[in-house]
Length: 137
Length: 137
DNA sequence: CAGGATCCGTTTCGATACTG
DNA sequence: CAGTATCGAAACGGATCCTG
Image 1 (cartoon, chains in turn red, yellow, green, orange):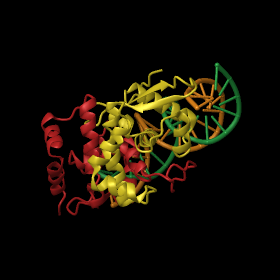
Image 2 (image 1 turned 90 degrees about the vertical axis):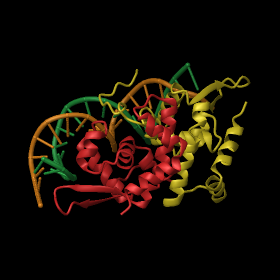
Image 3 (image 1 turned 45 degrees about the vertical axis):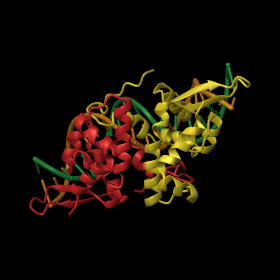
Image 4 (image 1 turned 120 degrees about the vertical axis):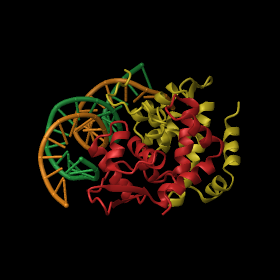
């Protein structure tokens, strides 16, 4: 069931497939929840991501797995629970997300906690390193 | 004709209204063309942005003007021509766009020229300053 | 019960044709 | 050149169902 759009917006473009990730609000929200809020399960995303419908969430998660941005694995203790984690490729999205949030915080009203924003802006690299360490094996 | 969505995905979100900009592929393409390719007119965007339909382009331009990310002004010599320029708020999107492109270049096949990518990655600040200088009064 | 798949009414998008 | 009008296609929201 490969999506076969008639449009050719992928070609000749220095953003390319990245547009399927960045150019979709739901995908961005999932990435924010995963990378910044530390959420990891279907339920958590569904509760957090601005009332995302379950079919939409399932679709975006599937795409993120296909693109090797996240991985899924079942909890060995409780087989019902699936946990999602970012890959190295996914973690490398952090600078993009952080620049987005920094811009949004500067120009729009956001709900971002002030202390997080301060650290995020004054030393983004340290902030990124901290987030990365949460996902180390 | 304000869009009045039932969803509340704007609230309680450290991305907020920014999602209307970043979470839309066409908007991203227009911003890329404006900021990086130096395009400035409706026609140029239409020719460049992966076959964007004229109504979509008109819609996205209108939104970008509403959000004060770009301004439009008619050419005093030729009243038919409308030229678009980024505002300060719009120029501050450069770090986001650049991080996106750097990521895309690393993980996907892109059509970005190698020499541009090199400068963009080795000294992004200088690259940004250079782009900015193109839009100085 | 968690994670999804499926169905369906509604909204939004986008390709094409056309206009000031 | 810079947009609008139309209309079919796709995405979305919400409910429900399924499977382990």
